[in-house]
Image (tube, rainbow, N blue to C red; front, side, top):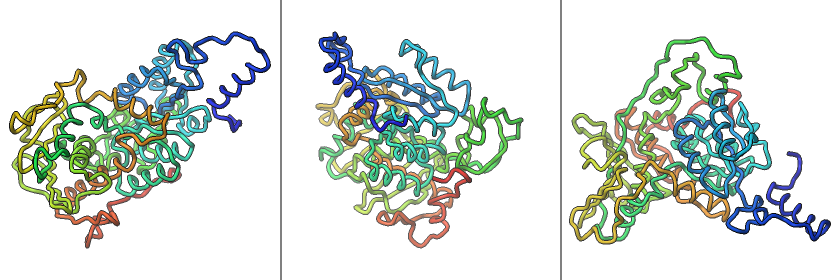
Length: 428
């Protein structure tokens, strides 16, 4: 771990030295990457941080990649460390997957090229920032940041360090969503005027669950699980996934659970990546918690729960003055008139939940240095817009947002909600 050589350079150097000193030694074709094998020097060494339900699902697709080797997992829970290690060891055919309680020990390893971060929301941005500073490329589950300030700071860190970052908004690489966006951008819908993004029922819990005896640190490291958020008594429900909806843990009133996907797709369709709407206002739709947002060019973005066509979870709809298109996780696509269907793909074999092509996009970019589809700047714009909408909902009033300064105009209370205090010693 003290050497300045990367694992790949070390292997290349070692092979070169072997060919000089021990020539004509026979080197297996698999080492050289022939006969369809991936040479070890070309493999991406992957680590995982907080790999639970969704993270385990994504990891399964990553393990399928022939040029990726999963080498280590870090988790505050001993049972999860054991589960992920068993999965990795079975796949790798050995017992070499390392386990860590503290993810910073994993980041200290010089041989790890990239990390999958699938902790709860509170750790996504801080862990991603620390990983980038440690020279790792990052695939982070969404929401990637629990405040406006953290979303922007993460994007700036990725830009400064030159790392590859992919947000886990996998629908940017799912065929039916890609086709819908392409149609919207093609002009065939006419001039876009309204975008629709589905969201959950919003929730903002400020209470605490009843205190329970805190486990020993090696079983569940409660202090590290909380990390940067305010301290509260341990309750097993939190670490079992029941933290969602509590303001301390997600800070977005659950709006980003789907909004990070659907608003992101609307931004892409409107060619608005890197910017945000400028106004956010609650509107009265019975039984809904709808929020109307508007871009500087006049395009309306409507965040709503109800009124969809039943095309699966996470639906989006793009409307122009000459037609509309709607799609969802079923892969089915509805259009305003059949002439728009020409060239659209049939429903894909895998629905919008699948990250298969998204993880491949990430690993291709790890190798090439290119930006993946859901890069840090893309994620910053959609996350900041989601947070601005959530703040408008929490305050129950219309807000005007300056995209250039990423601040609310004339509303100091809203501006204070762009960031939040960090519990010591977890500042970064």
